[in-house]
Amino acid sequence: MGAADIVPGVSGGTMAFIMGVYQDLLEGIKSFNITLIRKALRFDLKAVFAQIPWQFFLFLGAGLVLAVGVLAGLLHNAYEHHQVKLYAFFFGLVLASIVLLARGVPWTIQRLLGLVVGTLCGYLAVTIAPIEQLPSTFLVHMGCGAIAITAMILPGISGSFLLLIMGKYDTAIGAVKEFDLITLAPFALGAVLGILAFSRFLSWLLHRWEHLAMAVLIGFMAGSLRKLFPWKEVLSSITKPDGEVVVIQDKLLLPDMNMAFVQALGLMLLGIVVIVAIEWVRSQRVDQA
Image (cartoon, rainbow, N blue to C red):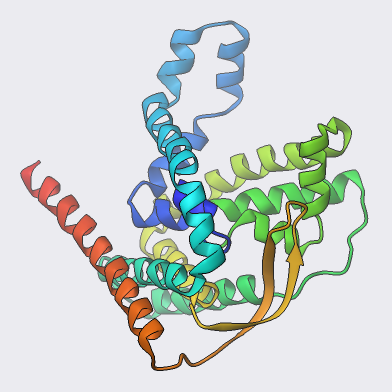
């Protein structure tokens, strides 16, 4: 997840979905509630740690930090100088995951419709044009924070990309850098309320209509593959405060049949092999259990 979050356009939520920890992540987020706050205010640490899956979050957090610390430079360099190859690898990862996840769904007409709806939503989410400048009000900033954080746990799209689309990325990042608590407060409040509410909603869907919800999420991943297609022409972009250029609109191109295409195709196949290997290891452990 940490490696995915480093690469613009790749979602950490997608990696959580691929690696089979998506529902664990949702359930872990759900454990943060009013009851937990009451226990924390009573300094009942034993009860607090009993309620939250702290070991899960500890190892997940360690992996995120390790990825950022070890892979940030490597992936940033790959994004700057070998973007086609990098996206080809992630395209293979997500494509193989979609196929493997789809095999586990008993398909019906209703679920196929859910797949179509999810695919359309995912495609629109990664191709939407930037919105005209929104007003800088408390409620608008809170709504932007909620939308951005919910996107981070949806497979297929990153929250920072949506902030760019909504024209509030510079405002949010500027507030973080300058430690402007007044500006940052509504974003943070929206993020907290958004992730607590949306994680519960997704968890409820997966428990109540597991296969339909899975079909929609698989469709969302399929639609978002548009963002990971390696061969594109940039139509418009936004430059972040740190100088990084993020593509907002582009169009797909047919690749030239040359050695660069062969290398990208090889990395795409490598991504597919990685997912198949992970699934094989997981199935072996299930059989042994």
